[in-house]
Image (cartoon, rainbow, N blue to C red; front, side, top):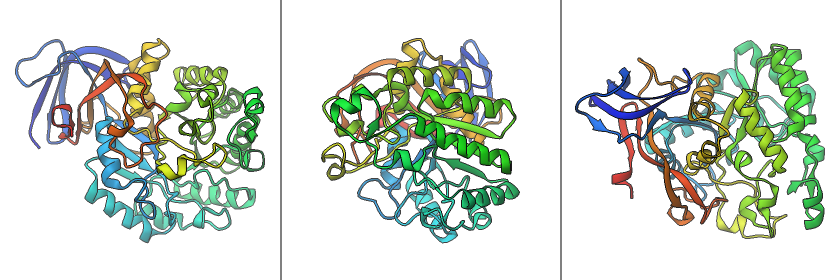
Length: 425
């Protein structure tokens, strides 16, 4: 690890909430010194933004079982190019990550094939079937940072309450997917006029609130640490705010797609816009942006979900849900910045600082002694996104051929360069 001085940068500090001109010095894989104003020597950042690397929570990597959709090598390259320095991966693989042996396999693959940090979540119940609790203690010892069944909502409240009680005793974090499984089963879009006009199966926004209310009641009963992976409807926000105000150990996230797109983007059955939960109304989108700004929603994630062409080139109802987002998360977030909705420190609080804190990780900060996990980017650089150039194996992005702003110039992990625009393939 070589020592580096990065000068003439806009330092985006999400912890202090500041955006200032200054310089930063890296040594031994850490930030060792920083200050405002000018400095001599080192790398000239030309006034671009220097921020903590993105900590992306809920990334799907298809190992084991679906390497044709995404492997650790391709996901790692995509993440580095997108300014993501840590991926917290989901356990909804084939087979699910529900034993220490599978977790150790995934951890080794990630270490050998990715240039960035990877911290896996493990399944909460065996095979994600909601019937029997996994060995939470052993999985924590093997490196699991949280426990989740992903979008396979545990319908048996007795099983879920037992899992929460056990997790509370071990200090484990549970990540839930707030949806009522009955109301949301088979849904392709959000219920309302648009769904009726298109004749598509839908779920009402109330399904999210009902699922969240149930989970929060169990959190209140058990005292477990709980994170809602995606909140996307305005009707769910009051329950979340009440839970926080009452002192429950609760946080929530939202995907960048639900902050920048709405249900009308589906248009004439465009399957790259089919997500889970489905895209919501414009009123819901704006409510989510406001909730990030006031801290009701803590974390912004890409919810990176690679799907191959065969899974997407189907009728809308039958097509697989999900979109890739590791490379598009930062430029999509710049839409919110340029629209004046959120400042850069607010965005990086939600994309870096808060996820690192919630999942017990050391990154997300721009202070002396913090890991030198950094991204240097130009928030104003325009480009037309061409999905064929994405580094992910799967190319299912809703932003194909979209004019975007915000280009990553450099990414460091532990002080080592893992992406440079000059050396990009």
